[in-house]
Amino acid sequence: MSSKIVMIRPTEKFAVSWGDEFEAIPLNEEHKTEIAHFYHRTSAPLYHKPSGGNLEESLYDIERYFDYHSKKSPYKSRYQLFLDASTLVYDKRTQLLVALCLMAGSDTEGHIFNIFVDSSYRRRGLATNMIKRALTVYADEYSHIDLETEKDNPARLLYEKLGFVTIGDIE
Image 1 (cartoon, helix red, strand yellow):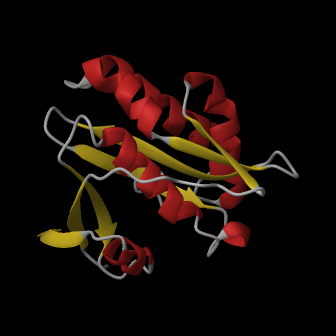
Image 2 (image 1 turned 90 degrees about the vertical axis):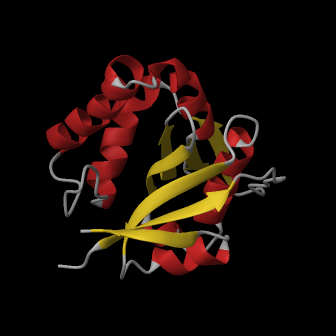
C-alpha cells in the first residue's frame, strides 16, 4: 500500500480555453445524478474507494459531498466559492460529462477534493485546465491550494508540472 502526500501551490490567474471540443461549467447541485452516473460509468474513485462502486453508492457519495460542504463543514460559508471553483467538462459533440474537478477549502486555503478525467479523454489538457480554472477562481480568496495524492499516482507528474510541490507525507 502506497502512502499519500500533500502537495501545495500558490494561486494564480490564468486565461483558460476549452477549445471547440469541450464546454466547462461550474458545479451546482442540479448535477448530482449526472455526476453519480459519471463516477459509476468511469469507475472513478471517490471517498477513497478503489472504484466508483455501484450507482447507488456513487449517488450517496456525491450527495455526501454536497451535504457536508453546504451544511456540516466549519467552512460552509464558503460553499458557493467551492461550487464556483469546481468544474464539470462536457464533450460538445456527445453532451457527455467527461471530466470533473470538485473543490473544497478552509478559511485559509483551497483544496482539490477530487479530480477525474474519463480515460478516453485523457492527455487533452482537461485536468490542466480544470486545475488552472480552480487556481484562477480561488486567486482572490486564497494564497494557495493543496491536494492529497498517492506517492505513485501518475498524475503527480502533472501536478509537479503545474507547480505543485510536496510538503509532507500522510500515512
